[in-house]
Length: 300
Length: 329
Image (cartoon, rainbow over all chains, first blue to last red):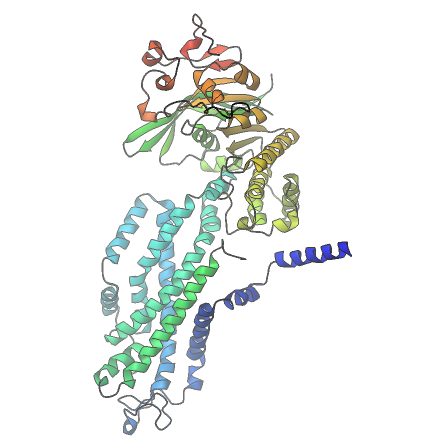
């Protein structure tokens, strides 16, 4: 009897020690935080809408029957009403999801890539290259973000690809700064010296020992910056430099709706809410990632 | 006479600082024989760690420079090796155990992955052979459930376990020289005793040479065959372990020994050497210890003492000059 119970507990311990599969573990941890869950659900919803939006949308977002212009919400099947050209607002918001998601993701990845490369080079190799790169970052950080985006997109011209490029060119500095400081902190850690002491070559130190350690801040920054870029895209489109009408994007919906703000509130309110929800979702998920991915907290 | 594994001759190391160059290591000489444990003791700032880092070639490249002397490892000067040649030595012929087991392991890799590293660098082994070697060495350093531990992350282990992992990491390629930089300072006393016992046992099994850096004379007495006492970047005394404790020739060594707590002196205040180790730029032309030395006289301030030898017992103190020979007991 006695020995039996001992073996079962040992087995239980073994089960606990055994590595859990990635996906299960992810959801197990996610289910413990309602904010993370909410953020994750919103992101999934956005992704689904951007892929399958065309199938769900009740109307054609480009169809403009002028007779039905400026209908308030919940009339004639237009759940969120229609705009000044009679286009269904709900359908346009759904169609605009694609633009926001593409821009948010693509910009965050591109800016993250540039910023990480610069940050790692500056932080790992130090010396003059660090000084040069960081002064460039300083200079760029002294310009207002939106102004910089406007200038770059004015040079490049409007359009989806160009807006991604200009947002990334204006935004990589944030990554470079953070990643550099992370690399600086990690290269001085004793385990790096210990790795050198076991005969690991320099480049392997960089790729195998330093990069995995800064992976967490990179992922977190990418997710948090995505929200910023979605808003920035909306602002730039609002100012007329971004995605050009008639392509539905939340920013230019706000831009077009602002003339009717006193007579037809729904034109500007619902795209605004879409932006808020998206940014909130991305930020909640980013926050949760930050709390979860810390290896010190892993498995607790 | 047994063969010499490591010989340091007149080593001088310079550091560049904002205010110019300072020289924390000034003319260090010692030898380490095969199979011997050599203790290096001294206060913080006496240059123990810098010396050991120099042997491993781990000094910060841009800020420091070996300005004089040589380090002979297996009769080969290793101060002029390039990165590649040094890499072949590190982890393979010589390895090092660091002071802080809590920060010496990379938090994002499992124990197994980290221990695989030196084998990957230095030995041609299949994945399976590597795993077997790792489990074998973990068992040797007394880690239970080694098969499971290799899938654990460092933060899941206790301090003592991590230091055992660090020791096994250093031992994997069976180095000829093992440098231990205060390996037990960060551990509590019971674990400390276990780790020291383990190191002694492994050293005896593998016939390695140990360079044992510490400020704890109790640990030295436990572990070492010979002792080098360092003060302010130079060696002030070298002696066989019993000789050093029975008959210290340098006032600094005597001060260190007197500072040890004894069993029957519980109520009295502990002895301490007054003052601090001078910074490298504060050392004048005289003996570096003169300003703290209770035996100091005029000559000590005027010129630096050479090394006096009394058989194998070396010391750097004017008191040992042949016509003086003061007994400081």
